[in-house]
Amino acid sequence: MTAVVACAKSGKKGQQPRLRADALRNRERLIAAARETMVEFGPEVPLDEIARRAGVGNATLYRHFADRPELIHHVTLSVMSRTADRAESALAEESDAFQALRRFVHAAVEERIGALCPLLSDGVDRDHPDLIAARERLEAAVEAVMGAARDSGQLRTDIAVGDLMVAITQLTRPLPGNSCTNFDQFVHRHLQLFLDGLQAPARSELPGAAATLDDLRRRS
Image (cartoon, rainbow, N blue to C red; front, top):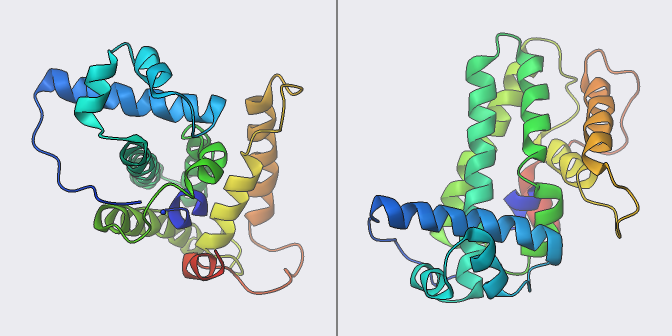
């Protein structure tokens, strides 16, 4: 998910006009279909396949997105927005701060950030205003979840948002090939092991310093 946070490179996308309800539904279906097909087939998946998966015609796709870079831009925005939504909901709805962190980490898997980050990192403009705003909202939402867990005394103090995002990205990245048929089952098991290691008191001293998202962007 720095993945999606730090992996935000192509821009020329401005404000979108207000859409009718049916047009908005088609747009959302296209973005969802693009997200899933890019995970399955890579960022060069034919646009025809994305339209087919969304249940619309090619003309509808091109009415919403002029080209592939514009579509990738909006897929990235969608993933960042939905991930921020999940962080904010977890914090608002869970009475236990560390449970909110657990809920967010497991929910982030559903956005496929581990698979999408490598695919999208070369296709978006990190300095586009929309992406900056989405990134800032996502960072704030995740930091709020971690801050609450830290303040409750349940989260070890030697990690930062960058550590969490890198771990989620690495642990949710699909294995090459089709040899692991129940990959999602293992993802959640391994995330649970990782989360247990985040709890205070710390069982060991970590090498190096806690990584912020700014650290990750400077290194990318």
